Image (cartoon, rainbow, N blue to C red; front, side):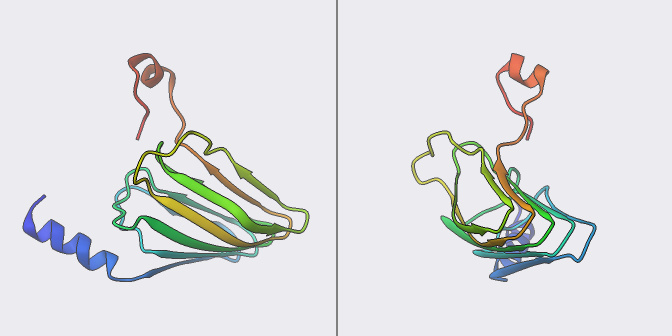
Length: 140
């Protein structure tokens, strides 16, 4: 990593809050991005996908607050991370945690809290494709 690239990454993480708001439509955070310690997803309708698989994350814990109406919040995390969805309340909505493998020592933890009315909050690993499975690696 060059000096200027390292400075950009450090500067990008200085913002301690990522706000994802949508009254409809789709929002997606993926690729190489800097993860702040706090994330807020406010979705009366529509969908938000937050993909952590290629993200730069200097924090051990990430606090995420969700307010979901009829929308969907999808978290995609690398294997070895943990996602806690215990503090998400539902009013007819669904909370699905497919992140069940044992966490790596010192792994990142995402703690999600908030409210889901008729929408969905889901956490999962990235999908593995047949060729990647045969070669023994997941697609990043």
